[in-house]
Image (cartoon, rainbow, N blue to C red; front, side, top):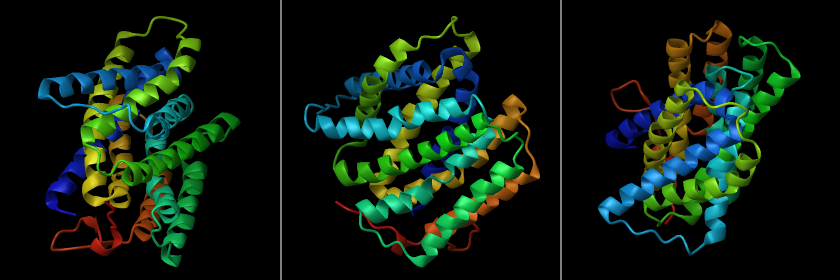
Length: 304
């Protein structure tokens, strides 16, 4: 991974981490489905406007089925799941649970891209599940049916993101990044629209919730996903999924700074276990003179 790609990975991770802050603020006012449908439709509108300004042409009439699948996996399914989860757990915990995405990506890449699932990777996956168990037992939350469902919803969203990344690499490898991002958001908006119309908010959203929606749409969706899909094309889905290393760190930081969310040693222990599992799963090693984690070149298999 080049320095430029790593810098983009860091920037994208910070924006994805901020999404948990915005969701935590906005979901109680909008509700999960209305918030997320507004998010993807606003994002698609901004992207379409930008495409018009720069003279970019879309080609959405082809592969309509594929666009719907990508939009569902990348947004229509995981976005409401995360919003629901954050009604019952903190933004910090939700961000840490999303860190399991590379584990699911390894499984999906093995099935869909025929990448090798070695004993080392299998061990990493099992260690990641242990990390989730540590987080559930030692994190700052009471174990209730609602919190268990919230944890499962967060894990399901991580799995959906993983499938979306692998699917995008397999089906849309030669499609412009702007087209992929806009198409996935627009498709997700169409999928979510009927449910959103059926579940309107009981009262008018607060001004802070509206501002959070704008930040969620422009920063954590438009800019973040353009960078995300660009990384998928340049370094592949497995390497790109290592953004999940940094998302929980930024998610915990933003939650502690702006929402005064509690942070305890159990959370950091769980995060370390999960990150260690991802290091095994994605074959990370220390490279060069710096002390940063980067994926081995041999672990990245590009297609197309």
